[in-house]
Amino acid sequence: MRKTLVYFIKIPSTARFPDRDRAFARHWSVNSLRRKASLCAVPLVTYKEPLRRTRVATQPTPQARPMPRAVGIPGVKHVVAVASGKGGVGKSTTSCNLALGFAALGLKVGMLDADVYGPSQPRLFGLHGKPRTIGARMIEPKERFGVKVMSIGFLVDEDTAMIWRGAMVIQAVTQLLREVAWGDLDVMVVDMPPGTGDVQLTMAQQVPLAGAVIVSTPQDIALIDARRAIGMFQKVNIPILGIVENMSGFCCPACNKVTSIFGQGGARAEAEKIGAPFLGEIPLHMTIRATSDEGRPVVATAPESHHAQSYITIATQVWSAIETGGALKPAPRIVFE
Ligand code: ADP
Image (tube, rainbow, N blue to C red; front, top):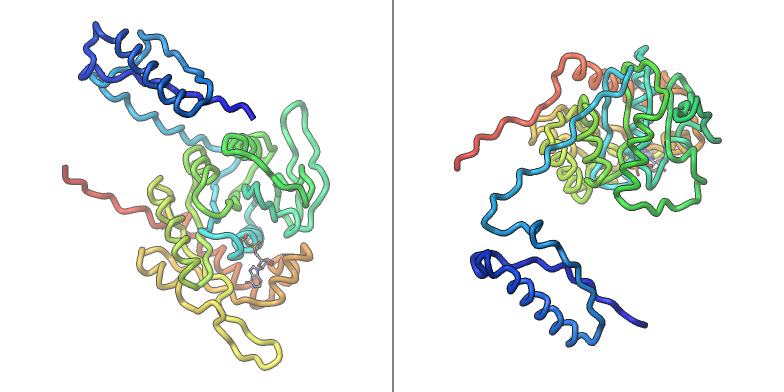
């Protein structure tokens, strides 16, 4: 197979080659690359940058690119991101029940499934089918249990792998945010993908987030990544509304003995360490798993149950933090230079 090497030539600085000798410098660079290419025995394709556009080292470093300005979503009062460091810790389940918890408080709620690589909200809400379009550009969100839901999962098959690069993901999330007829909402819950990638940064920079709720299981390996997620939000000045410990303790249905399979108290300790509110513990329980898989989330279908009440308590705390602006903002840092 024929291979081609593409070299991008950077003209050496004027320190080594004064301005008047730049033509020589360029000649020197191309020749040295030719030599490298001949060693590799592959044809050389060079990119020739016009001399006048070459930035030389003596010029001042260009200003850092300004951050994109966060622009609100028309009609949406508050946007809350639900994030985790790792996948599989119950972030989507918590997002879904948190949104339903807000609805139980009488709020107008939307759920944006931004977990484009693993959209779970259609299944959690028991929704399927393509959403309707309104006019040329807008999409109508689907609605169940009093929550408006939009997910890439409505547009692709459940078994289809999303093989998208960063730019495509950002485009998709931006469309889900801005080209959906959300109407008037008190709060929009965003189910973020796990980790600290493109979507998180896009959301943090382009949407005025009221804050982030972090979901973690109690064991160290999950908490390490949760810490990273917290660090990312703090770096981009997004308040941490609190931490939820999910799968915290397992109550055996046969003997009622509670076993802390993943440990217990890790997320609470982490919250204390960073001074963020600890929002509560949700146990590892069959009912939560079963109702989630069946598209009958526990807050909507058994609102009086112990589990549902735990989620509603979390929603109450988050809402009060949003309303009072009592979320933990990263403390200002004094930098000595
Ligand atoms: P993530 O969004 O972090 O990848 P999910 O919310 O999809 O995680 O949850 C992963 C699996 O764990 C799902 O099958 C879900 O039903 C189950 N699950 C989540 N939280 C609990 C819980 N507290 N008790 C039992 N099962 C849970």
